[in-house]
Length: 420
Image (cartoon, rainbow, N blue to C red; front, side, top):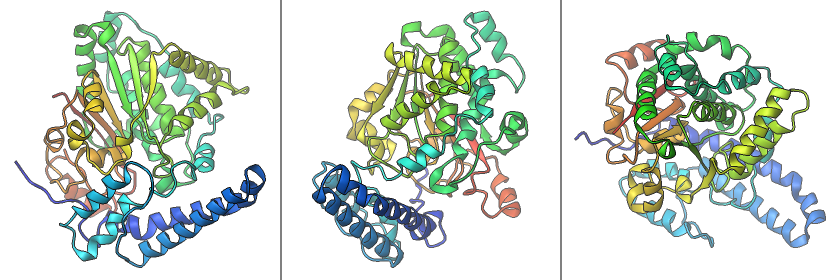
């Protein structure tokens, strides 16, 4: 089997740019936001809590400086149970050259704030329930077609069929990532540009996904039809994911839907349980759009009926890539084995599926997963880091000639599927 090196291996990589430039900017926003809250902490809590806030600001400022000036990484020192896991992981990273050591800040940059979400305000601003695009996508998601005959007709339709559109919306929702594209607005044009954007899907296994779902619809008992979403971002992306989930649920392709969320604040806009619940409630409370309010109520009812479940596990914010899940978190792995399909959303999930390794661009997606095969797997991801697999021969060269940043601009995407 082909053995690859880790992607984080040089000053020219997007990882280096992330640590040197992106994360200090994110930390600056966190520091500014927390600084503005100090006076409120004194009023709402007490002087000791406010003093803790000042101490956190000091530590974050020190971290920012050390990241920007290439200082050696220090061991984590807190009471959380995963601190020793991260420290052991960093100690064992002996294959990193000294010039690459700042890249290990990836493993420490989110460890200081675990009970306070410094990104909450940004997250909530990212979802405007009045954006007109949402209404048309809700209409797509809530069309019901329960018979096997209608579902077969759906899958035999052309590339603009409803299932593929739902998958495509979920893919392109991943463009709206606050860690990279803060301030990017959702455009009504997305509903009319899906066909045009299809040419930007560099590896498209959407048809295979549909064929597999057809097979599962006819061959998997109804009570065993389970779909898992390993979520990425709150806001537009989560909305489109909810619409895809509703479409699968309404068309009897899923009897239960599991949503895997982060248990701590993570890379700005990653969804936590509280974010998920906040967005559904925001939809339900929308007085200006009845279809949005009805949709929010419907989703809330699914959760009350235990048809839709929100699941937390610290593995999703651990240092381990997903190939280690069966050993490190066997309960989670065994749970995923009960799924009919696990849909991984976004760039970081994709990187962890691939082990953050520098696979050849033409390497097969299934092979890059190595032994991580709990269930059929789909990855919906727009490219925001310099690794990708499953491309046709010569495609990467053509793209590089046209656009030097094609791997990191969020303009291109992949829909990749591995059945076994």
